[in-house]
Length: 109
Length: 113
Image (cartoon, rainbow over all chains, first blue to last red):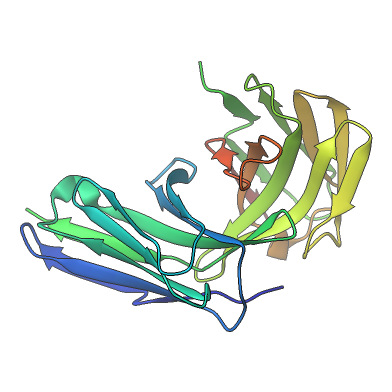
């Protein structure tokens, strides 16, 4: 099992503020994915990053894959209450995903 | 209708009972997975199947078994449930060769008393 560590575990911010969530590992992954999970539902894929150094933007969300393909970050600009949820990173190796424990983000109105 | 459907959504059972969780999908994907989610531990892979004739153990398969009845159906069984199997269980599917993008069901909350 390849360990993925996410930080922080919890994050509570005011609407309009920015936030960054980190996903770190000592292992190299062929790809890394970010999911968001809302209460009572399964995780939903936000993005997949494949190339070291890759940056992807999804509206106010910016995802970055580290040059060595061991770590990733998720940055949200001007957070909104609708961004509230559990954010999970997952690294792919040998056609299987290993998940981090997640970061619970709460955006207060 | 949901693409990945899990039944039941909630289940309370007693120690020693046999339990089956069912998953069906309409996405036409070959690959199906069972994960459990525990607070602070994330999602851990129990079993996975890359096609109807293929079954593989994940990282925490002890105490569980699976059956792939058809491309669209993948069930998880707990032969003799124990309290530390209390968790949120997710079924997921993926399409071969797609960087393993997973599509999850809504989960089954299982409590073993």
